[in-house]
Amino acid sequence: MKPFINGKFLISAEKLSQCPDYTLPEFPLLGRSNVGKSSFINGLANNKKLAKTSNVPGKTRLINFFNFSDEFMIADLPGYGYAKVSIEARNRWQKYLEEYLLKREQIKNLIQFVDARHEIQKNDYQMREWVLAYNLPVITVVTKIDCISKNKIQSTLSHVRKEFGGEIFPFSAVDKKYNEKIIAFLTGEEY
Image (cartoon, rainbow, N blue to C red):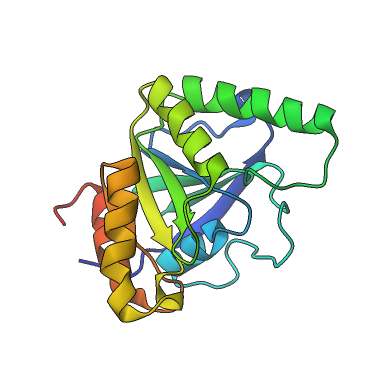
């Protein structure tokens, strides 16, 4: 079991036709802006500079692809719920992202992120409903787990499991002990 796996940035794409031509299993990251998707990528790779993190929500505007040791790909999608862009731009993103999520054959599993510090938000539920309506495979990563008290971790994970079901993984960009199970899942090993 590995706590880290080598990752490198490949390419950014706006739409499906621009996505890289790879056959590796691909895991798109879904989540609100500032939920910790970039920190997740950096944490798995043990490289704080791999994916750009920002305190300003809505910075990711394209699908950013990362190759992890030729074992799997992560596709970092624009966060939902916040972005200072026009309605026209937002509608275009939605169209391109739906096309990518529904037609990209390499996608093995979607990964939806929720923030441990907050209740599950309305747009998190809406995203999950959309994913389930299309019967897409999805797991949940609960980020910023180090920001809540130790005695609240299990109840937080239980709440997310009750609301969303399926596989639930805790994650912390600070405490790397959670990485091994996530990497085992992404590489198809037993965890």
